[in-house]
Structure formats: structure tokens, C-alpha cells
Image (cartoon, rainbow, N blue to C red):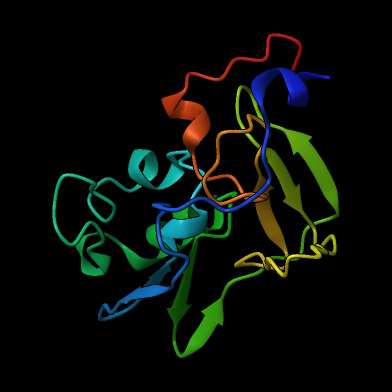
Length: 158
């Protein structure tokens, strides 16, 4: 199959973005981010560019827009890389129906708390939603690292 053709390997690679949670404290909302599992779908930077700006350091500014709008944007994150705390409550998982979808030229998007099991011990940032590599180029397999974007992965059938 295609796995043999592209030389697919399922191990985590050296030089990958560290799998760690960073917190950006704000007055009304605190944003939690794990760059190591980000699939680079772009919902955060497209929908809340005042809060999520890759051209500034730090790239997250929780107080630069309305907290409700920011929370709504974070809930769009397919990988589970983003979560938030508001009024002392951590908002990480959502109550969606279980499903697995193939994203256009990107990862498998898993939602609804489908149990993930990996003999190597990998654990998704969110047990309710996460993205799995489909292109074979992720440095953080089995999770998507956004590498599909860099290698210009195309799947005209899906």
C-alpha cells in the first residue's frame, strides 16, 4: 500500500515540537496551548487574530479580544492543542457525538470521546477530540503535527 511507497514510519521523531502545555494568563480567560499536538488547522489565527498572532512573542494574548469570542474560537480547535480556563473552570472537552472525519488534505479528526489506545503510551491532549496523522510526515505520530501543510499533502479522493 501507500505506506510502503512513502516509507511510512510510526515513531516520534527527534526535533519535534515539545509535547507540553503552556498557559497564557488573562484577566477574564486563560488559554492553554500544547504546540506539540497542534494540527495547524488555522481556526485560532483566522477567527481570533488579535489573540492568536504567530508574528508576535508570545503568540497568545488572552486579553486582546472578547473572552467569549476567544472561547468560541478555542472550541473550534480540532486537535485539542487549545483549551481554556474561565471563571476557574477548565474547558478542555466538549460533549459531541462520536465521529471520525477525513479533513481535506489533512488529518483524521476524531471527536466525541472515542477511546484512544496506543501500545507506545501516546495520549491525546483532549480525550474528547484529537487529530491523527494521515500524510505520514508528522513528527509526533500518531498525532498530526501539521506537517501535511509543509509537504503539500494532497488526497484528491477525500
